[in-house]
Structure formats: structure tokens, C-alpha cells
Length: 410
Image 1: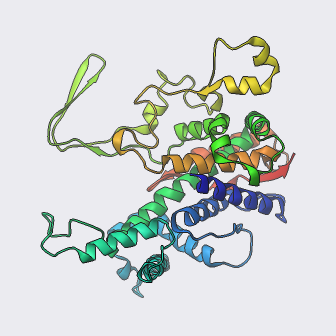
Image 2: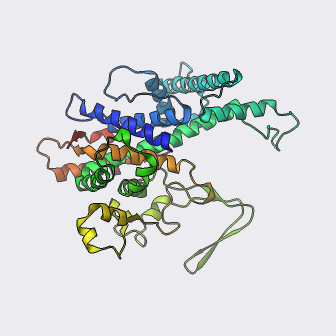
Image 3: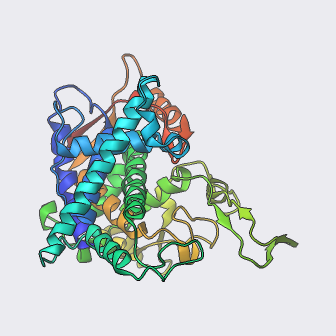
């Protein structure tokens, strides 16, 4: 996770620099920029392809931008791709939007093939490879190709290793789950912070005390990440109200399952689909007071035995006494729960905390009101934009750029 931490800080520094250097009064697109940041972190950590941050306002498109644009078009239209094979989308009589999607899908596959071929060449030459996820994929491909044809599963497929198509599918899932979810959460968070400047000060208080006078290029993961509890609370609270997915698809096993709800017993038949509602559980008033209120402080608990003098006067002592609460089991599961929870949970937490701490240590984001619009009116408009969401593969704002944000040093 140290590399995730370092790359996230690097991307956050570059993003803030681009925001400060924006020619206009506002950031052109926070949502696009957080997507760029998250994709760059994933490319560097997962595939050892480091890219410098490039704002959505910068002219031209670099290699990372072409890859990002192709991936984003594929992600935005994933449901259509599940129904229509990409090769059919490029037929000349189809709508232009379908043709663009077909070209994007082809371009994205070309990027994946090139990464796989480059990694294969390194290993074929006897070199160590990049040490990334792609290295593991190539070794899995090699295992599959070398396996005896007689070793098959019940469907007639090789029971070991991965085929090229399976690798491409895994790369797509990693790109989707590894960058789009975090980028989406960052986009919600930037607007929430701009609408709640007192929360920015609350987080910055902790960041400045813990990091002291060190620049973010000197921040050490092992030392700082566990101590940045308020930054973690921001992520936890944002995911509580705006989880990437609204329900958790599960299947019962081959045996009937009994679930006790209060005094009732509910029996699930074998092999039946079950969809626990993440949003309903995470906003249930029995477990979450004022459940629809974004209130990151709810995640922080202070020891009741704390010395009053330290709690009121010594910030460092007060921060040491703060701990993150653990919700009642079954009331909070944005990364799923149990033995098959999301393997990227820690990755997302480290990336998010690094980016947030880097931004808020010396900067603040704010809403730019319209002419003759008070802050309260602008704040209401920001919340209405966040509430105007759609749900394809992820819960996302329909038009996040409708609220203009600015970023400046304090």
C-alpha cells in the first residue's frame, strides 16, 4: 500500500496545481479530474504505467487521455456492451453513438493486448517483468497454455490458468472496480466538502497537526495513514449515503438458509438470488441518527476517560484519544461483507485518504454562487445536484458539473 499512497499523493499534488492554475474562476470539471487521478493511480500501481496528471481543461489528449477516454466510454455504456457484441456496434447503419462505442471498445482492447504482449515479451526474455498485475496475468496465461488438454473442468474448459479473453475480462473489472468507484466517491466528497466548509477545517486540523511542517512528498504511509482518522471518516460517511452500488447481489448455496429477523424466521430456498439493500441498511434510523444527514463526525468517538485538560487544550492528545467507531454488523457494507468482500477496499481507503489529506492541508474547495445567490441557496443547489443521480453500474450524479467549484490556498 506504500506505492498506492505515494502515487495518490503525487497525483493529488498535480491536480491541486492544475486547479490553482485554472484560467477561469472555477474548476472546469471536478468529476473528470477525479476520474483522471484515480485512473492514473491504478495505472501506476496495478500496471506500472505512470502518467502525469492532466486536467480536463488542458488542450490535447496524451496517451493516458486516449486510454482514459476509451475506458470511460466503455464504462459508461457497459450495459449496452453486455447486450450487443462490440463488432456489431461499428456497422455503418447504426447510430453515431453506437459507432463511437464500438470504436472505444476496440481501442480499449488494443490497449489491453499491448500491455499483455509487452509483459509477455519481458518474461520471454528472462526478465523479471514489471511486477504488476499484468505479470501475474501472463503467468496465469502461461499456465493455461502449458496445461495438458486432458485436464478440463465440467464445461470442457482448462481448469488452471487463464485464457486471453478471461484476462481481458479481469482487466476490465479491475479498471471498473479499481478506479471508477473511487473517482465517483471523490466527486461526491468534493461537493459535500464545499457545501460544508466547517468539515474541511475539522479535517485540516488533524492533517496539519499530524504532518507538522513536512511537505506531502515526505509523508510516510505507515506513520500517517493510521492516524488520519478524520479523513477516513469522510470516506466512510460519503459511502454511507452515496454507496457505489445500491444493493448486494448474493446467492444462497445448495442448502436452505434460515435468517432470523426480530422474532420472525425467514427461510431462503436453495440457489435463490438475494439482494440486501445497502442504502436501506446504511440509512436505517434505528442504527443511524439523522440518517440522511452527511455528518462525518458520527464516525469519531472520544474515550470517556479522557483527561479534560488534554481534550480541551492539547490538540495532539485529543487526536490520540479519537477512534473510529465500528458499526453494528450488517448495518454498513459498501465493500460487501464476509469472506467475499471487495479485495480493493484497502486500496480505495489509502488512495482516498491520501488525496483528501493532500488537498485540505493547505487548500479549501468552495462553491461559486451564481449572481445574487447566497451561500445557503448555492448549498441547496449543490445538494439537489447530488440527489439527482442515475444508476447504471454505479450510483452517479447526472450532471456533477452543474455546480461550479473553486480551489484556493489558505
